[in-house]
Amino acid sequence: MKLDTIDLRILAELQADGSLSNVELARRVHLSPSPCLARVKALEAAGVIQRYVALANAAALGLGLNVFISISLKTQSKEALAAFEQSIAEHDQVMECYLMTGDSDYLIRVAVADISALERFILDQLTPIPGIEKIRTSFTLKQVRYKTALPLPAAR
Image (tube, rainbow, N blue to C red; front, side):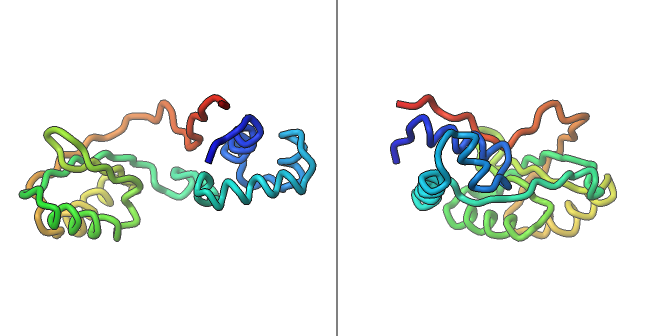
């Protein structure tokens, strides 16, 4: 789908506040409500807009510890990677999971309450996953930047 300036403005507004009513969104992007809704529906149908979510405050939910964990697997076969990915997707604490290049096979970010919760996660949920060879953790001292809005390309 080729995005024009209005599509990009719609995306920028919705990334900033996904709860905007269509009428308010239309006002902000200088369209009438009907064409604005048609554009949003087209963006959804094309998969440009995947879903709408509410972003919860981790600290307010008692999840004050953000940890990055590097995980190396014993083998790198297609089957081993698929089995690990299926297993890791079952854990609510895992916020992100990336297949990496270099020394680590995977990098995951977990949100837990504290060190005890991290220890329980690693010992009770992570280490039983078959095929894991090495686990390395890195703690965050503070969150310098966190955003969910993607950078948007210039209109063509």
